[in-house]
Image 1 (tube, rainbow, N blue to C red):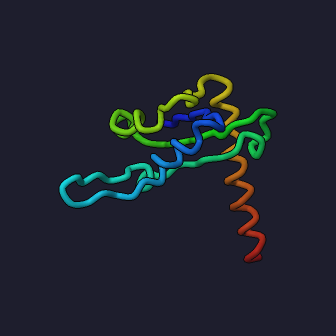
Image 2 (image 1 turned 135 degrees about the vertical axis):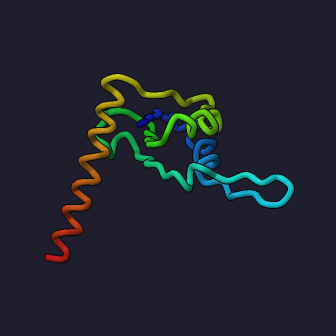
Length: 108
């Protein structure tokens, strides 16, 4: 399951805090599943969008989102849906493909 979130500038600090939180050990064991699952965080303009903000893409199963989505759903974050979601996913995929092609050219 792919989910895309639009993160307004004012919410980016809180979202980054959740995404980059250290694992906690001891009495309060908590694993940062975002680090283990992986995610893509891109500025909207770098994806060719004429808007401010950042997009967060996470590919995971439904259980992951059930456990973790609340950690990033702060004020200023909304799930992207429909054509907005598809545009972001397409732009991220193209960016990744271009990066792979560029690495291939280095070793030719």
